[in-house]
Length: 543
Ligand code: VG1
Ligand code: CO
Image (cartoon, rainbow, N blue to C red; front, side, top):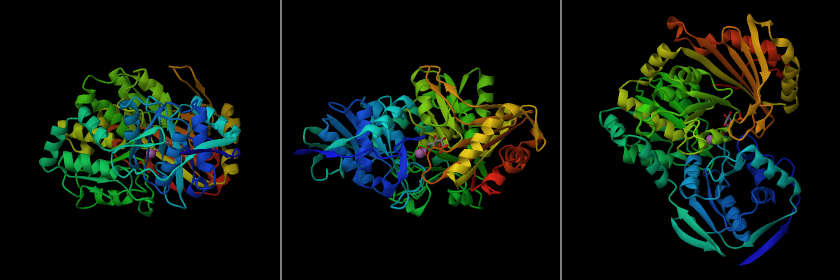
């Protein structure tokens, strides 16, 4: 087999963001673009000679082609073995599980997650380390440095590897093992949850609708919910992954999963609804007529996880990303659990999970997970909810009511301003930063600022420092607004404004969040001049 070295040059902008390198698919398809980044990953991790890696992706457009390139590059550079999901498919949590189960040297996940897919949409690649988690900043910094120094890459000349059925093959000296993407993951779920109890719930007439949004979780959800647990056939909808996700936006929130929302708030709503994203690591939970914000979901799961066998001995601690609401902090305080606040992105939970300091983690962006893998995990969250409901017999609404009655409610919403001119967004953040020292004590739209800082994180396990992770402003009475720029977008800048207010009045637990947060929303605009600077008077997406 011929092995060739191709001359190349550094390509600007190959800096991994919140979760890997995401670009327009046609950018990834430009000559050398993918190859440069893959070679830089290999260089950044000290080469792949003799190593075993997992490879899989969410099935979006170019996933199949990219997989063949990555295999040929790994073969050229002496990798010992590649464990590849059938048809180059693996959900992100299943890839994380595979890396851990097979004790590999890491893995490459091809996905732009919740971003749309297709020739005109987005593609992405990320590297996960041997613990199964997204590479920490220290590793992504090395990968980025390698992208700036690259002069050539190695690849073998070979025809495509057949990835269409499980089994062993080889490419030159490299072994290739094609695996069923679902089996090991499903087995792990069966270890963690009481499948009999959930099956009994379904057998008793409890109805469920899982919207896979034409993305990777379709086959996983069908195999687990319908085939193993006996949910009625057709409970999993939009279950066949398609390269452009059916033309949709596979982001499980009330806006992009509006079809599911309509069903759940309609006359024939099932008992339980859920959706997942492009690569299967996010989840949206919705009951009959009851949307659960991801922040509340994390808090409810933290308070009730012990009802599932995998968590029966209790939690060692909990962690949430900084912009996530502090609903889970209340649970931690009551239950005497350690509670960590990390920067946005799952890579920051890895050390806490590895060190056994946290069992459950979550983000406001519909990511929840535990120490069972090192990624957030959409279907896992759905199963944990179902296991809890199977044990306590409550409805989703009742779960929320009881939770708020016990712990209080943190009204929460995130407002996204998408496709903002990058310079305008940058200037907005810079001027906020300059104003920070003057804010405390001042009032905006009737809210008095009690704290204001730029969040930085010192990892309590390895001592690493991550600066500039978003601006947080606290108000007297417990309200809060956080400003951040997204690190996953591919066009312009996305300004994220995270709004939160605490409520302990039992008579005020069922307000519309936008209305309950009206003062905080007005204060956020007054402080940051969002409308004035961006010309937008409403956000593109409210979740
Ligand atoms: C977003 C979310 C963040 C999440 C990240 C990756 O990042 O806010 O919470 O970890 O996406 O999720 P950003 O930088 O755009 O705010 V996924 O499911 O897209 O891998
Ligand atoms: Co995702």
